[in-house]
Image 1 (cartoon, helix red, strand yellow):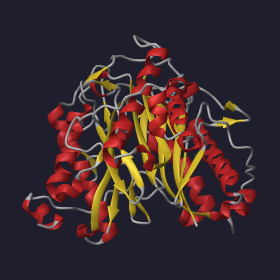
Image 2 (cartoon, chains in turn yellow, cyan, purple; image 1 turned 90 degrees about the vertical axis):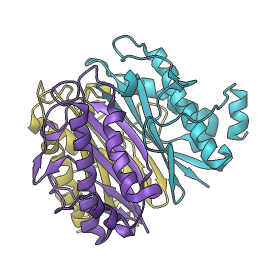
Image 3 (cartoon, chains in turn orange, purple, red; image 1 turned 180 degrees about the vertical axis):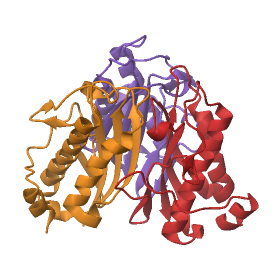
Image 4 (cartoon, chains in turn orange, yellow, purple; image 1 turned 135 degrees about the vertical axis):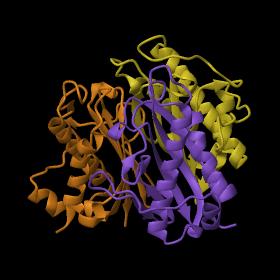
Length: 152
Length: 152
Length: 152
């Protein structure tokens, strides 16, 4: 099953790529590497929620946020490449989780993003990953993820 | 207008590339990608200021810091490449902003860096970007930015 | 002296590559770039210690942690490449140091990682580096480092 078919099966619709919050672009291609900007869990132009893990945001909620970051990344890729079938591999993901000082389960939050990439792309969705807990994110978002993909 | 001419027009003089704060190098080239170390807003060997956004540092001040990080990156590139005209593209920028817990305008700070790159390089200065608010930076710097550039 | 011989001389034994804390992989190769996941200072499957710099963890302790992150990265590379002699260069290192609000010596912590890479690989071990102080890391680790290497 192609990534596009898999998305359909999962009931995920890609919308317009989210607009950057400044004078940069969502994606730059160099050779066959695609560097994506940090994706926030924006849906219809608004964050799904605000706040931090270990405070007002639960792991389950942040997992939904992490999935939305992936969906937004795929929207960016679709808009850049025309078709997700041109993706050869997800290479790297840096996940930033806005965290209270004693919240140490950043990997659990980001697994929702990693799992979704595996569901959609299979083995080609397996990536290297760094997970860190940060103090505060743009717009008070609970999660931000940036990505490196490889095209065919 | 070439990047070098543009810098002259903007009244920006590149000085010696800032010395690393340890046993690493300011820039590594692999293929035609240039990975730069995290740049601090050092000027004549000293931080322009210390502190955090949402506390002692204003957005306007931090924007000056962000511009200085770009100027330092260009000094590193000039020292590595000999001439900024050899830059094909700015690929990616990771901006770390030392932030008080309720400061969420990291993108506004980093726009000063993004705008300056666009001013100097035009469309080739447009990059992907991730912006995060971190707890504390080396030397108590308000801003740190690392960069990936592509050469011709 | 080859990297493998140098490790022997330093009395460093590579063990099995640490298992990812989720649905990602320790290393992805694209072209001749190797993107490694964020390495934690795990030893025999457990963190050497937990806590933050400027609180319960000293710079000297965190330097040991940073070295362990490098050793784990080399274990991952050895498992991926078969032999460390296939490494052409260490390209980039992002170091995240869990920090109290007034701890600003992240570079000193990460120098232990940079120095070890230089000891093992010589000039090929010199890399670009970004160092940031973050709020909290997975498992309450004091240090996390991710890496980009280049193969021959």
